[in-house]
Amino acid sequence: MLYVIEAKKYDNNQIKEILIQNKNIKFVSLMGVDLGGNATDEKIPIEIFLEDIEEFLNSGIQTDGSSVELNEIATLNDAKVDLLPDKNVNWYVDYNYEHIDKETNLAVGTLKIPSFLLHSGEKVCSRGILERAENNFKITLKNLLKEYPHILKSFDIDSFDDIVDINLTMATELELWVKRPEDKADLEKLYTSQSLKEQYWKRTRGVIRTALEESLLVLQKMGVNPEMGHKEVGGINSSVSIDGIIKHAMEQLEIDWKYSTPLQSADNELIIREVIEDIFSFHGLEVDFKAKPLHGVAGSGEHTHVGVSLKLKNGKVKNLFAPKDMTKDYMSEIGYGALMGVLRNYEVLNPFVTSSNDALNRLVPGFEAPVCIVTSLGNSYTNPSRNRSILIGLIRDINNPLATRFELRAPNPLSNTYLVTAGLYQTMLHGIKFVVENKLTTKELEKELSKEVGDDAIYLDKYRAYRDENDVFEYYTEEERNRRYSKPPATVYENVKCLEENKQKLESLTFGGVFTEKTINSFISGIIDKWQKELVRRIIHNNRRIIRTCTKRHTPENMDTIDEMYWNEINILRNELMKDTMSQKSLFSRIIYSVDNNDYETVSSLQLEMNKKMQKLQEKYIHYKKNLF
Image (cartoon, rainbow, N blue to C red; front, side):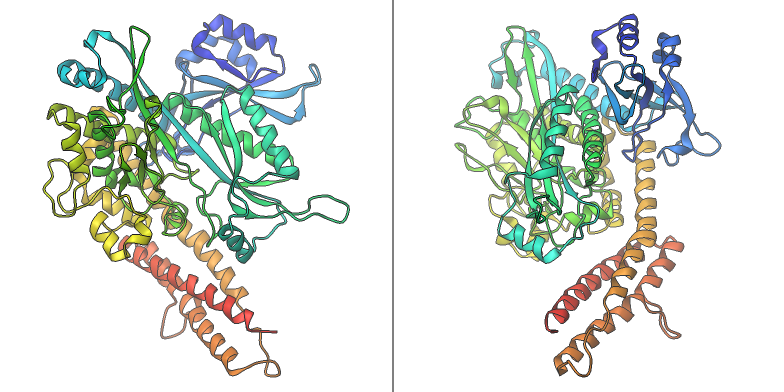
């Protein structure tokens, strides 16, 4: 069966012929991606597409913008949005294995064409922003290399004319939780298994192994080029029934794939998630891509790797982040500029990376998830960093300069990869421009990046530190971390507020017209709206359910004074959180009231108070139950 069409290799007539030959492909779907990261999916009969393929590809289709997340852009009185196909990336065939075509006896397929969302002729979608970021990076960097030829000496390039092209590469590491629908999480077992490292990189078994292997094989056919799938740190051992059938499954997995261009890689990721969900569901398994599906155990990250290289006329490739001599420098001048650009401007990038309650739940100390704006380079030029407590790391191999790249560790599987990557390249470009235009050397830049709090700086903040080779969670107290790297936002509103407080850094995103005031405001409006609705309709609702399960378990005949003391402490928390009285409103009611009145500051503060009390309640209740026969 046909799984992928590399559209840029074919003209319209060739594409038409390919589809006519594959009669089981019955539908076309234009996959636009809104600012919330949601992909559109509509079933258009293939006959309509084939009738006038040229018109379809040049003009696309019109849709109602109220059905996509483009807050303050596609309004009720101006809701028309166009879906325009993209011929410069791969198209994929999505098969429904439960629907077999009677004529061919093959699964019915839908051709998924990555597309742009246009409003009033402007690309206002996530794909459009990333496309602009790629183009802006390449054009600006080319101009810099031409105008400041001194930088070419770092790469042993004699002339700007020797350069053929600039290549941008990106890939992510997708983590996920898998379980049978009937399995309930035993947090103590999960935490113990994680502490003992019983699952990490262990052998998969049974139905999870089958689903993982099938997913990798399908992804190979789709041209995504998966490199590996393996167990992650989370999960517990499966149990087997008396007849040898695995009856329990709850594991954390990771799937990695090869690098491609940023836009192609982001498209690949959407397809990968769909393939995984379909195949695992076919085997009766639930897939969860949330950043923190289970409190107290490992969350799921999506480390994002980015690189930049030059292609030369002589066929050679030069990594622009790698230094001339890997034993005498950590990075090139461009590498330092890129890394410093991300660190200096992260406050305005962070809302696009960490945009939900779920995402912030993952970013807590103790779970190898980054909290501080800090990097690590290594203890020496010949000893690459292995520090997993930092936000963005330098990945380097002394024997392979082409492998030099940056790894942003903050994203999660539901982060909008298009916007994260666009923001990464924009902030990197901001630092690169400064370094090149000011003709700074690698030693000057290493000193700047390694500065202590209060040291003078020419690009970075004087009152911040940015590099550390220690485990920042073990080596420093929370107060020390906040002083060195700034206090991290703990709610969606705090993250948005951080962006407001650093408006002067927004130029790093808006340079070249990549992010516009309109798209930034639309994105922020969307995440604030979701933050409030999720808080009231999901988080408080779930917390009420948890509180109602925390019931009195001891009886007068089977108790000790300490049991009564434990229960009284639990009951006080239950009432503070949930119970309204004539004289006092509960914490839940106060949050709902503040949401109704758009009092974001109070909502944010009360949310943090609620989170602390809910955690305290659950810990106390577990302790209380353990003391009962």
